Image (cartoon, rainbow, N blue to C red; front, side):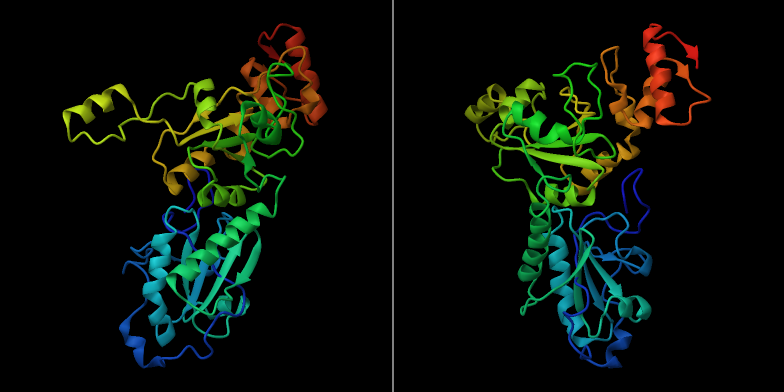
Length: 376
């Protein structure tokens, strides 16, 4: 299920998943109903998700309301081909555990109408729900590797195919690129009126937050691409590989706990003490296009933990509370939630404000008056 503030969906956050509309199934399913008594193929025996990471879903879960890229196997417990695929499907869930892609299964015996709705004509049928599309698995081989690679390729192609908007991961090789390539997507107009303090919001995401992954690796991981698709239009994501170390210094991210050195000898212990481990990977959030980080992720680099942290910026309220305004700020660039938050931060209220222009005038009057508490 989603993190705090996210959609309430009964999903196991660990694994990934996917499926394709129509096609991809074995006609008739095979095996016959004589295997019906062997029990379901997935689950924990108590109505929950499978221990392997396969999410047991219901009709309300499709298409995924949280927009997480999801692979779905449509199956029946009595189908022989489904029973053959089950151990492979569980391997797919394990292989995609760190990708953010959900791997799920829907029992068509229990949910015949939903399976018919998605064009399932045989069992098992594999479909993927990615970026608002339903895609059929077209591979001839149903191996765990081929299904895993297919799911990853769908996410990567969907993200790369949307270059330039909030669903694509921005490349941030330097501080200059940070402002131009990433912060321009979440520039809500803050920054105290300074031209250097905030990026202009040209492709604005609704939560006014940009999330940057700094890493020593050359390419963004599948997880970052998955998050970019899931939070499309709400959060912008960027990746710093080559220039990450310079940005770490600029933002004073510090050193990660622990050491990569092997302390099996006194020499190695001394090396570990004198050479602290790299602070990378690190994740930083920026609000309203400001170059000063608003928050740094401090949890374990797991999809569910990162997703929950991102949901902490839901609705733009957190970033709105951090908007910096002064007499030089173009208040017309701010959104209504930001204007309200800026008013509240100065102790002002505007009981009669209805339109955006009302809030702009109220905040401008309060700034001119010196920011003292006022009933507007």
